Image (cartoon, rainbow, N blue to C red; front, side):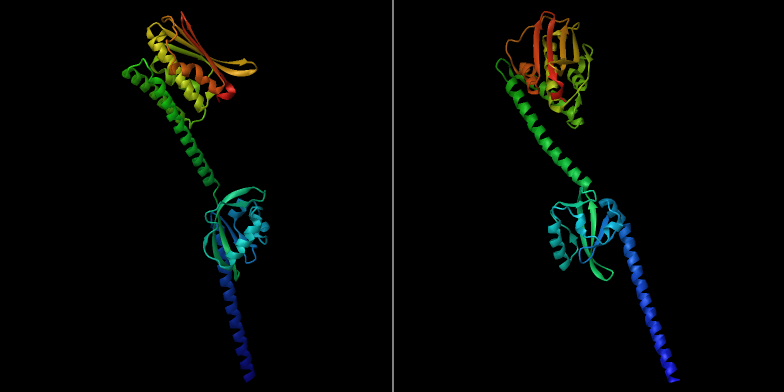
Length: 347
């Protein structure tokens, strides 16, 4: 009887222990399922790394980021996701971190990159978090693809350098205008008026160029702005090409000088005067060239200026910086100006 009771007691004790063990196993399973669900639901890539540097889990975002299937990742060394050039160094850094793990960003202050299955590299931001996985110490790496951020930062840096360059150029142009406008033979009022017009033209040209982010812009657009309220007396025909910012600025000054001269001394100084503008693409010595012709008619005979100032420099010298050339003819029927610019140097 005593033996039977002892057996029953032991059996009940074993059953109780088994039940407790099963409950513990179930709780662990639920905990692992909860961990897995949390990892899978994360929008960023997550890699769980075991004590020997082996990948013990990864979510679908990590699969997509690195181009591997989860089965390829699990069990492999985490160094498979590190650029080959730094993989040997990473082994040492990983070992030191696992010896004294703490929650922190990886590689603070350094540019980090991951290696995809196709061998390409992607800029990353990585957060490290110590954890337990199946009763062993592990590290959860939360991985963020920062490609777009890096591209934005690079664009901002390029923009800052471009702005510095543009501002420097603008001040250089203004200084040149001041020096060439304040010449002998002009009183202060006349010089101030000319300088004001030229600075305003520069501002207008920059406004148009900034709209296009200083990329190629329509020559017709710049021409229309430069001639302003004289569209009824200036007829423009021919091709419309797009030019870079530097050429656009120079072209605006050229048209302004031609217009100013026509208003003061040429065809636009009388109601019956007209200006005919023609833009064509010609092949000269095997090279395509934009030919811009400005022909005044119906005004007084054209006469050469007594002195050469900033206007002459703009009309005749400035095209040379683009490999172009220009000519001015002072004829009885009116001024004729021809500008030739190689297409491959202005776009």
